[in-house]
Image (cartoon, rainbow, N blue to C red):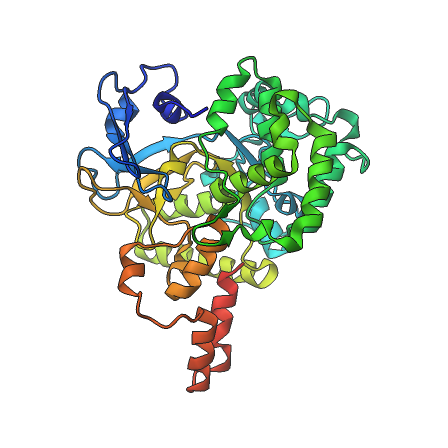
Length: 444
């Protein structure tokens, strides 16, 4: 049951409730098909000017521009079907809205916690946009939301099923047992959350139109392996079989839904696990980061600018010394349109969360011509600088494909060695002993 093209655009901000885009699927050959359509385009769809094209079977969908998109232009803004904060991130007191992941701490509170200095004071406190007076708790389980709108949205979509009421802190509650089991399997740095899967099930359980939500979730790739390339997702290998079966039993005990019975079978649970693992988009929010960006935009005298920049530089050094590299509220979400963007190690677009919540912005990194594919990178900027072999290892284990982007093709003749091995060779040739430290930090 595939999602229609109007479903694909329906979570773009400003699109819901407007005329759907007219798109059709054309199977150009056995391995390619073309989707296109122009009639009934909404404002956001017209601005994006995108169409879908089925690519070679192993790549699935691709996203293409149908008119010139200029460098720096926002291609689209999208909200997720579901999102959830990572469990260890929440346990370590990174406070985020339970629905939209907006950071709940004031920038100064955030700085105090991250530096370990209760007396830390930030200049220009008026630049912090956190509104604590708007925060609300669920009246039953006391989870916190940034606003009444988020509390109501969560309640309407999934929270009625997931609310544990007065059992919120009971270790024997089925949902708490599930979360504890997940934390024992998946340690930081986190890349997924069992609660994203839980919110998928809860959304269907609560929905009046269950078929629509099942159709939307079926939009995502859920292959557990790439048989042609003999790749298995790193969390679905033989060594994790026991943990996966425990998670499946606890997941079933807490959330079983007849309409989704296939998700609770051993094979179905593996597919659901793969869906979240390969499609989940990382989300990061930070009130401190928002404050820093606002400081950057201030018009100041040169001396004042120098002092403020020096203060911020020292602040981040203090945070690194006390906390390391974990600065943000972190989680992941499932974004329908963004999931259609293929990967490139030299992307022409990037994803970001500039609104300090789960709204994803896709922005052009360069001019994109009509007919050109819009590609993002599934790797962070540090991972993209690693060797081709190292990049491929990450992509194979997490996303089940072998990259053939222009950069990888250009480096095809390079030796098959990981970046760590390259660094070892450099160290033997006279590099300082701490040359590897910087790369280890980027893994966090």
